[in-house]
Image (cartoon, rainbow, N blue to C red; front, top):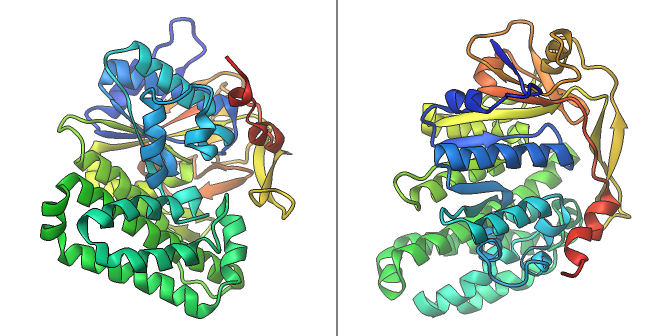
Length: 414
């Protein structure tokens, strides 16, 4: 195992370049959302990957459908202070500074950076962003579906919200008949799209068809996940059901890779638990097969995953509350010293508690059998099989709910 001291004056990121090799997809994680330093470090790492390794695609844990609109802003459309006009989620939930950096980078450099979302809309809060673009497409390709799509949208408006936590409550208040109708009609439309591909492509284009079909899949998966979350909260859910969303995200990465230039290389920003290659496991309980496990299956050595963690004694947690517009508040939680057997404890005992570091897992380290995920710990029988490496930050600052939702950066004038 190789530990690189990133606090050294001459420290560079050649260690990362060696670790990724020829991988076409590199994931950069975080052990918790809403940490400013994680955003800053990942932005620095991505800039290096872009300039030194040819990574020209920035993808993140963000809605697949919403990503198309946000990319327009990143490419220079609209006012740079009006990110919220293109994406309220990106403006409010910790990504605004990185999105502005991407826009300004593209404005001053010839080698442009593309942007892509890979997740279901609002992490499951709505299907409207996936359905709205379909209205224009079916007018061109199959107007016989127009009435059906309008019915679907009418039902969808009854549960749409800023986050899945809020939409789940609304979903439970919809009649079972309407829930089943929504899922059935979405899948009937998806099957029709498959059968009519040749006709649809002649009336539009292969690119337009592929995007429209993916949007249909997006809506169907989101509805499935809403129902799965309801069943899980009531104790009737199926094991590993959360894996449906994870596979969707992995398939989205692959979709963007397959619809890009042959030499495209994609960097993915997502939580450590999404990017890890092995099942998410609490003790002996296996909870979900993450996106990273599917990407590892699809791509093999063309996929590399790097976690971000901290040796600090506090971490952001999401506390559920009906008083919040998104169903939770972000709180700064004290967690004390790292647990024995954790990657964070390994760093501490090896003199890296107060220094930024990078660990390249070239060999197995049997002392490590867990790593932080918010204030909990995820178990692993092989840290080398879980991640290609880990970046550690000694001190973090938690972005609270009020700061995030006030959207201070993009409410200011030029």
